Image (cartoon, rainbow, N blue to C red):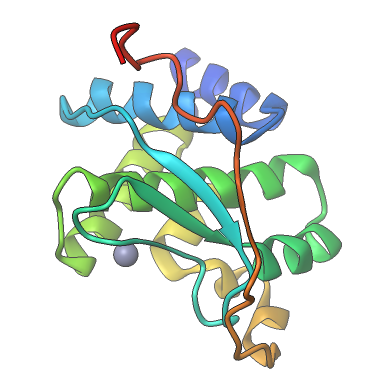
Length: 167
Ligand SMILES: [Zn+2]
């Protein structure tokens, strides 16, 4: 049984329209659940090896998301809700790293707890946070992409709402 708040979060995830909206939700729920917050991140999209969903370079302001996996997932997910769940889970994971949590297992556990608290045990985001996206999409295990692309794209207007007006 989901609580009223969880039902609202499930509906919210299903209706997210872009990276910016997704990241706003990530920041709001991380603040609500863990009382942690930071601003001023940028999002970069780049083709990366299929073993890598995204990364945050320690001390930098950037989260880099693998467009190769995004493109692949878009073809195999059954709904926008599932696709949004993947992006939410990935951004939440990297956002937690950007808050200074270096330990990979700690971040995985926190991402899982966050998703479970928001969405319940059976939601796609919670399952992916627990066992990785390939637990739901075994197709991901046979991907062969091993290169980093040379091109990258900076997502515009990302994380703007918390920037100060004084530049
Ligand atoms: Zn990580």
